[in-house]
Structure formats: structure tokens, C-alpha cells
Amino acid sequence: MASLRQIFGVFAKIGAFTIGGGYAMIPLIRDELTTRGWISDEELPDIIALAQSAPGVLAVNVSIFTGYRLRGLKGSIAATLGTILPSFVAILLIAMVFRGYADHPVVERVFKGIRPVVVALIAVPVVRMARQMGSGILPWVIAAGTLVLVAFLKVSPIWVLAALAVTGAGVTLYRQRK
Amino acid sequence: MNETLILLQLFGVFFLIGMFTFGGGYAMLSLIQTQVVVAHGWMSESAFTDIVAISQMTPGPIGINCATFCGYTVMQEAGTGHLMGILGSFTATLAISLPSFIIVLLLVKFYTHVKGSPLFEGVMAWIRPAVVGLIAAAAVILALNVSWDGTPLFSHPAFSIVRDNFPDLRSWLLLGAALLASFFLKIKPIALIVAGGILGFLLY
Image (cartoon, rainbow over all chains, first blue to last red; front, side):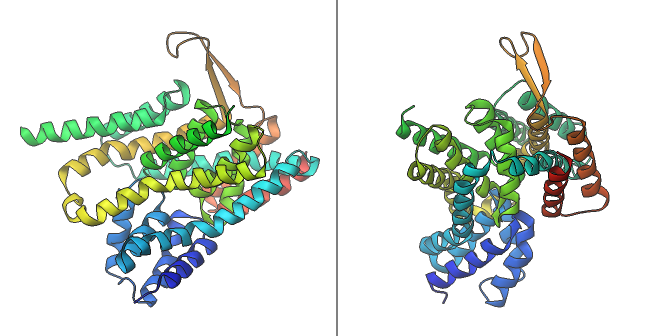
């Protein structure tokens, strides 16, 4: 059986070696977890589907679930700490140093070039996700409506998402009753 | 402002973000941005953009990295010392992960019921497209600023470019080049950020 230290160590390795997170982590997760026999190849799609059904970040959700499977609540805490801790320390150190140099002329020039690139990087997945949205007019109305409400009318996305969840539940229950 | 109060606010804000993030890291960035930059005014758009760049380049999930960095920066912007900054990082990171923790553990117990249930699928059918709009909104807010002189929709809007992120023509060209490079040449985000940094150094 996997010890808590082993669980922490494996997830720390996964956390420390994936840059960008999310789907970039899946191949690494598969390598590390299936070779140890902690999960089987058949289980992986189910684990990912479950991780996507819960809110939050994919990598963290996968660690919570796998850790739980291995050693219960303690296992899930060990796995989550493993995923988060290496980057937590790295980011904290960078944040402390960055504040001192943010106004340095060279840093300022470098980031002047980086900022438009970041905006592009955020925009790119939108197109990819929009292509996968499927047919029907409703998804496009929801997507465009959310964009207008959040970007132009300053409505908090949390209200938008909560309202959509309630509407979705209402519509489904209404259809079921009919 | 009182340090403890900001820590409590950080906890509340990041807990909500963790609870409402569907669709992964970029959706989380967009929620963090609307809360930290737009709703609370804890930092500027350009400070947030810098944090996103660093979060992308540092190993680990981008959404969590961004939360950790924001927790530190929010406390520092409030004029506190390093120790409170570290506490801010810790608070934001814990708060953003806690809802996942609770919900995943519940799902483990009830997943067989939830999976494929019409109600769950019905709710997700309305949430998934919103995530696309949400991420689009994040990109728009980093480039375009809309301010209303009263209640939104019932007063006059004023549109302006976010000058810190797009000071001149060069920055729009960089945006265009990055979009093309990512779409057609499939260049990885980190390589694009490094290229942007080098070009920034050379151009400015």
C-alpha cells in the first residue's frame, strides 16, 4: 500500500514538472500513477471525467480523488499538498523578488512585450472551445451573453454562473415532468 | 485597512472563485481577474497581466499559481510586510482549493448517481458555453476598459484602451503576432511569453 510520504512525493513530482497545468498534466499523471499500479488505464478516463465535474483545477481534483482512493482523507490531503506545495514555494519566492524589480527599466521593457502576448494566450482557447460548442443557437447566446454581462456590464461571473445553473436545473426538471 | 479584514475578504473571495470555477485554469483566471481587479480594485490590469505571465511560466496549475501570487500582491498593495504577504498567499491558495476538496470527496461517494444524471447534464449544458464567454471576457477586460457614469446600461458608457497593457501600435502588433503564432504555428505558451519578453526588451 502506498504510504502518505510516497503519495506526497509522486504528486509533488507531477506538480513540479508540469508547466501551465491542466491537460498538460494528464500524460504525466498517467505515467506516474499507472506504472505504480495506483490506478488502472481503464480508470483514468473516469477519474478525469469526475475531476471535470467538480469545480476547481483539474490537476488538484485528480490528486484529491486519487489520494482518497489510496489512503482516504489523509491520502487526499497528502496528494493535494504534493501538487500545490512546489509551485506555492516557487511562486512565493518569485512574488517576493518581483516586487523589488517590477519598476526596474529592463523588467519594465520585458513585460511591455509580454503583456500583449498574455492577452493573446487567454484569447486563443476561446476559439478552440467555441468550435467544440456544437450546434444549436442556445450555447452561442449563453456564451455571448456572458461575455457582454461580464466584460461590459460589470456583472460578477459568479452571479452569471449561479443564474445559469439554476436555469439549467429548472429547464431540465420542467422537461422531465412533461 | 485592517489586515485581518483583508485576509478574511481574500478567503471569502477565493473560496467563491474555487467554488464557481468550471472549465479549468483559464476560467479560474477570468474569475480571479473580475474579483481582484474589477470588483475589489486590489491591483491594476497590468499588474494582473504580469502575474498571469509568471503563473504560466512557473510549474504547477496556472489557476492555483495565480491565486498564490495574487494573495501575496494584495497584501503588499495594502502596505503590509512580507509575513502578511505570505499569509495572504497561503489564505488565497487554501481558499481556492477548499471547495474542490469538499465537492470531489462528495462526488466520490455519489459519483455513480451523478454521472449521466439528466439534472447534472442539464445544468452543465448551460454552464459550459458560459465558460467560453467568461474567458473571452477576461481577454477583453485586459485590453478594453468600459466605465459607466452611473448604473451600467442605464447611463453613458465610456470605452478606453487599457494603456498599461497596450501603450502603442507595437503592443497591438505583438498581440496579432502572438495570436497568429499560437493558431497557425501551434507555438507553446511559454515560448511565446519568452519571445514576447525578448521583443519587448528590443522594441522599447
